[in-house]
Length: 146
Ligand SMILES: [Zn+2]
Image 1 (cartoon, rainbow, N blue to C red):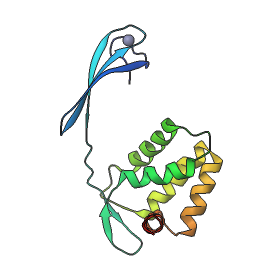
Image 2: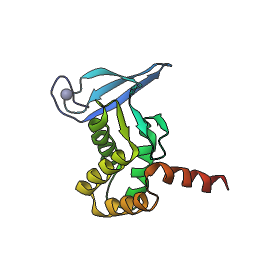
Image 3: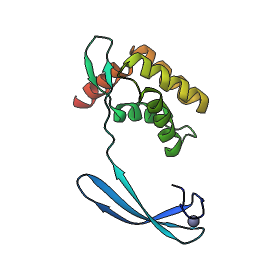
Image 4: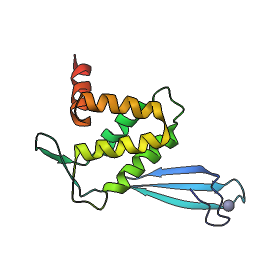
C-alpha cells in the first residue's frame, strides 16, 4: 500500500475495524509518519466458469489460491508471490463473461512458470494428471473426508 503523502510503500496497519460489508484500516507510513485510511470490500465477480463436464460454477478465487499454495510449498515463493500470481490470473479473466477451468489452469501454469520452475512443474503435473484443477480439488476434498 503506497503512502498518499510521500509515495513510499512501507506502511503499517495501526488499527483495523470490521463491519459486515467492509474493513477499515488505519495505516501509518513508516517513512513520513503520516496516517491514512484504507477500506477493503468484497469483490464481486460476474464470471461463469465452465467445467470440462459442461457444468457451470462461480468463479472461486480461493480455489485458485489453494492450488497455487500447494504448488508453492517448500519453494522460495512467499505469500506476496502467491498473491501476485492470483492477481495476475484474475486480471486476465476479470473482463470475461465466461472462462473454462482449462483456461484458468493454463493461466496459472504460465504465471507460475515465470516465477518458479518447481512450483510450475508441481502444479502442471498435478493439474495434468487430474485433467483439471477442479477435479483435483474434488479429489483433495474426498481424501480429507475419509
Ligand atoms: Zn509517507
